[in-house]
Length: 345
Length: 165
Image 1 (spheres, rainbow over the protein chains, first blue to last red):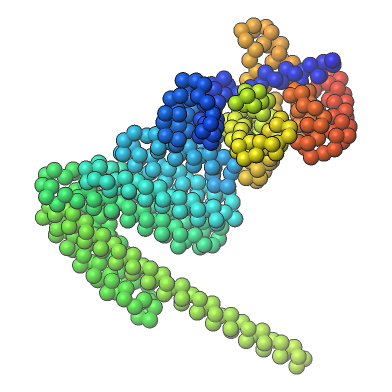
Image 2: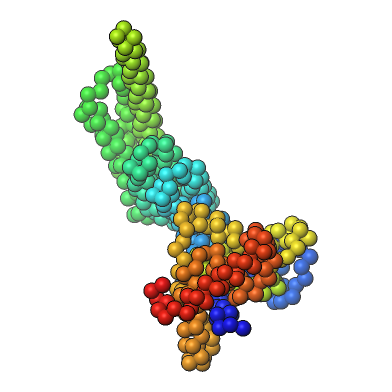
């Protein structure tokens, strides 16, 4: 045999690490066992796994793999973004992690972490690929689903809601900043506003989940105000403060612009005025230590502000469409005149 | 599981030479076994040559991976050699490492297709028929390609300074 052929055989010593091999062996074995109930139990691992429910068997194996893989051997799948081969593995691993994580608070944190991942993926998609509309929409949907999951767990009892409300609040606050950044990136990189409505919905979703959990945290109205944590009190205060800021900002924008009466959407002025009333009520209630009522009024005020914003947006879009149409008609008329001139010549 | 024990090393190597990243290679190897199991569970009889089938799945996964990345990875298979571990005999290990790195440097100068065929044939010991099935080429074409690629490799090996080929 020639030297080169012998050297080819040397390449056989390039192998995955024994721990990686062993870990995935367990995962694969569990998968096979799940798919084929007829497989006889041959080892302690298999016997233990068979005694567990099917989903937990695979979960158990995957979590062993995750733990055993150690810090230096993280899965490349964890960096996958929608559309990539490894993305399904990433999502499956996440489901498993939730299934095997004990404790509801920890599960809420996991879902929030996965929601943050979805936003990061969306940023990546927008940066890397201009034709990723479907993938971005799906990731936004998954983002909202993760928030729904965390909310569903948190709402199971007021004590849990109280424990996780500050975490959900901080996380969704950070998400809202990210969503704003994503929206800007979509404009600058893709030169269109295709994602505007979907990103707005996701933003609204983040805010509503935060409100809902905070409201649940304050569910026990009989709870003396002294029992309510300072974080939640502060959060309740920040809520009406931020809405008041939004109401004032919208009012100031109207004053600064040269909007005529016809440019203002019907009902927005009334909506903003009522929102301000709700904010005032929220402030009063908060000062009296009625945090839940204060929050309720804040939520109502926020909904009114959003309604006003939506109406303004629709009105603006309608106006832009009309202007475009008029411009097109003018251009057509000019073209026709040019054609007639040419014919005359 | 026998398939896994028998072919996981070879498939990992195959992936590694294509994607030049150990973690990605191992993830793709895992995906390959999952997919193969799905096929086996659905219809075991549909697969006539399991080894060729495994490599075909592996190859398709790499292609999908490249497509998703929208670019063909710059293959630096020489970088893979650092993992070669041949026990505690330091001298022997060093010799092995040198030999393997020498070959990897040579291989870098061949086209991707030639590298694939030569490693499948001489590292993993696949038959010409199996390689033809995996690459969807005729048996004769693979034989000719192998012969030419090996000749080219020997000619490169005859040159003194392979670092500047």
